[in-house]
Image (cartoon, rainbow over all chains, first blue to last red; front, side, top):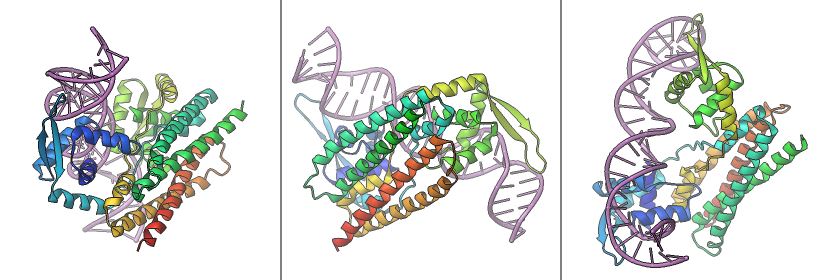
Amino acid sequence: MKIQGVILGILNSGPHSGYEIKRYFEERFSFFFDASFGTIYPTLRKMETEYLITKKIVKQEGKPDKNIYNITDTGVERFQEYLNAPLEKEVSNSDFLMRLYFGDMATRETMEMLLCQALREYQDLYDKLNEKYEQYEDSPLIFQKSCIELGLIHYDSFIQKIKSILTVVEKKK
Amino acid sequence: MKIQGVILGILNSGPHSGYEIKRYFEERFSFFFDASFGTIYPTLRKMETEYLITKKIVKQEGKPDKNIYNITDTGVERFQEYLNAPLEKEVSNSDFLMRLYFGDMATRETMEMLLCQALREYQDLYDKLNEKYEQYEDSPLIFQKSCIELGLIHYDSFIQKIKSILTVVEKKK
DNA sequence: GGCCACATGTAAGTAGTTACATGATTCC
DNA sequence: GGAATCATGTAACTACTTACATGTGGCC
């Protein structure tokens, strides 16, 4: 169960509420991880019963109460186990690659649309990630930085290749 | 439901059994799509009731009977709709990137192990895909070929970057 | 004798999403 | 007045996977 490891990692760097954890995902690693409230809240409850985290209810003025979670010693241990576990094999079910694969059975128009759409989306993802990257300029967090660099490299290589496929498709007119 | 589109795409290029469809996945696009028998067989049944495909039971000598499926006209239409539908956004839940991100909270040993393991796996994926690529040398299937090229580019860029992260980690000894 | 390839199928479980409910406050 | 933000939570649903059941025939 990967989400538990991710939550432990976030709580390992400080106490947070479920709502904050969701924003943490979105702001920092939305490009390779995602989870909804429907997953986060039940998972936090489950982790509390397993003594991996503890809950404190914090009252706020003008805002609803917060459930602030802290990681326990057992939680820290579990997080270290997660970091040392063997890598899960990655099967990225890519809608774009799948449809590109079937391109030889489609019309030129369909493929031009698909490629242009993919190009726009990858360029958008690249730009957003690049903005985030600027925050890391002099950061000592080399692994977080590397993570973003890997994302940028990946998007950039796709953008270049999609452009080159598009020129081949255009030529066939 | 993406798997239906994929099955339609395979049956659009000829009749196949569920077992053959599974092998088709594994041999041709295991690097960006995967599905188990537990998904394939029930999906084929469902698609038959929706008149997207038709079943023929073929008797074989020394082997069990086969259910060979053919695509119908409705199925061909549905496949074209699938190819023209807007792209689904891709969230590749990457175990490797997630754990790399938390690397600044881990020991150097842990990260060296993680990076070496990832390097080996990506190199393995690259080699396997490269073998497949050789079959496409003079192929007119430009989109299938491009697909594999995108896979190779992706793996290669990751391999190079992981190597460079590793040298940084090594220096810190 | 045991394992692999061929071939189909189901039951139980996993992991998650979407949509809704609740409710206060702030911004336009 | 409506939408957005903050904040938690549940129910229903989707989309799978894993493990098992069944059976033949070939290979070592």
